[in-house]
Length: 238
View 1 (tube, rainbow, N blue to C red):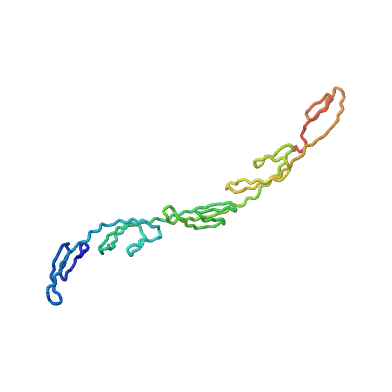
View 2: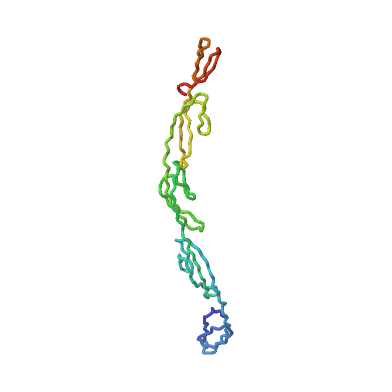
């Protein structure tokens, strides 16, 4: 009993068979006598083509049926079945491109910029390779700049005793140097120092005697009756 592939031929001696069936073939053995062969010939079932869809990244290759493939396309391949018959395969290959991106970033001094999990804190040009949504290379060309360091802004201010200066979300009532960090247009620290001087108020006591009917003026206030008065004026410091 023999099973052959569709389109093949099986020989019994010089007798060819390519149609399934039962056959009795008479040959001659080595003694010169009849040698009868009873043959049952079967035909292996025809194998329907198999469609295979594969995806690879640009730069990669697919090794199949002793061949390398690296270009998008449709390919016809022939494999061998367990019976040794042709097993046709249609390969539909898609090659996904890598993605490329260029970015220029300015960071504050001392800050770190991340491309994926790759950290950069020194100005320069970098090429980082990540993985995009397709699982292929995503190449990032990074130009990293450091923002210029901002020199502290130093100011001087003077207030009178009893007044307050509102600075950095709080009031200051005593002389001293106060520091605050604001945000620059790039989002970096912009230090401001303010030297505050609190000027004391001036106090003076005077006793004045006027003639009856006369008026005494203190600043813009007029007095013509005896008594004790308290007037607040503005001294030379304001």
